Image (tube, rainbow, N blue to C red; front, side, top):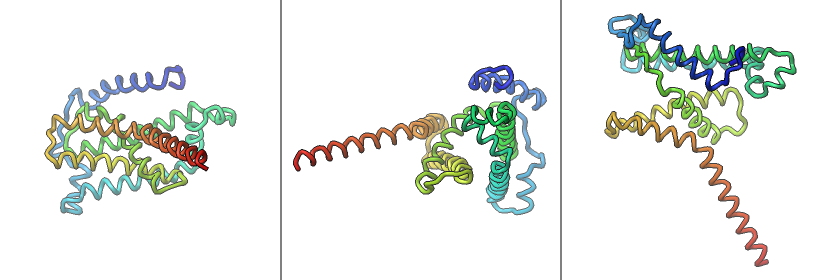
Length: 231
């Protein structure tokens, strides 16, 4: 994307295609690897804490640490440069900042977080499958939009802290919705449909909200015009 000038979407597709083979190599040429009987962070946490909430405590602690580190980093000079690159490439380029380097660093950090997430999921489920990440991009976008909508209700002036909160909150709410669907005995074969509906609603919410707001403004203008005529 940065050096060969490949379109961003195509670059992402090509990278994901190549990584499938790399993941197979990392997993010793196996599509599925069992972690039963292997010491993981979760088994050690269970021995240390006990009870049934050890996974939540470990996951919550790791998320909190990452959020703090990410929030601090994005306020540094390098972090501000990455943020500025995302907002306006031309302005950053005119400031003699290496735009390509900022893109590479941003993608490296994002993919590093994805790797941490994948490692935690594999350890929690006691197995790793090469197709575990299928569909996660769309789910991630839906989670972000859900979080943005919720945070916008309570926070008027957005910043880095509220953006990070929106990402975490949206992910939690999405999983709660999935858990609620499972609790009402929805069949496993229907979960893909439920997930698709949630994603469509989340992604289309801004358009629906804008349409409703436009309709309400139109009704107000019509009422205002009727009142003026009567007066």
